[in-house]
Image (cartoon, rainbow, N blue to C red; front, side):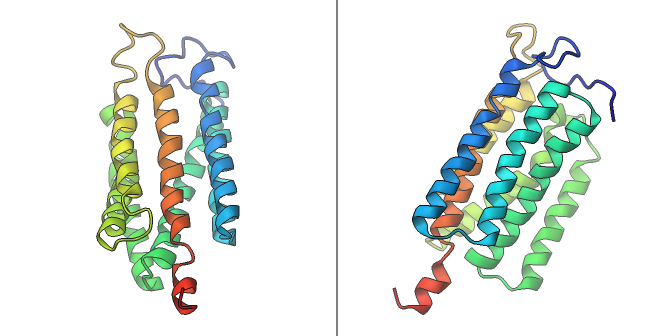
Amino acid sequence: MFSPIDLYCERLGPGFWAEPVNALTNLFFILAAFLVRRRAGRLHVVSPGVRLLVGLLYAIGVGSFLFHTFAVGWAQLADVIPIMLFLFVYVWLYCREVAELNAVAAIAVLLLIAIIGGAAGRFPQVLNGSVMYAPALLALLGTGLFHAVSRRKERYVLLGAAGLFLVSLTFRVVDNLICPCISLGTHFLWHICNSAVLYMGLRGFLANHNRRISAANGS
């Protein structure tokens, strides 16, 4: 839990500030959380679920900052756990409140994501460890296709998020490969792109959060 971890091109030693760019670009997650919170307030959809998602988005930024500064086992957990929780909470809320699936169907979707995640976790070295994000990519593609086909508000924003996530994954995969050419690496671009991906995903969710309430009121 306290042994140094060196995974990224930018890190050249065990020091706290050995990855300054990777660390500071986590501010984009904080900015995304702030923008989502403000948008939720304007749309009057500040429900417990929305608050939880915003809180987890803040936690993603903080956890990733801790990992790219302390770079030890406990900090890696602080990085990974909020991401996993965000994925499962987001998919659950989307299935229940936007797709309007019943609880059994929503649980089945979560189990499928967990199974895929467990299978991906068996190959931690493939694609520079990026295979572990396969469940997130599939969740974005699945919700994005549903969002587009069912003509939800912000119809194509989730498919756009899925496309940007593919670009983001590419930056994560090539980070160590390009070290001989670019000593900074590309992991910081993974942070920047992912903050936009999460904002776009939440934007699509917020736009349709009150759909059933609006329908019941005839608006």
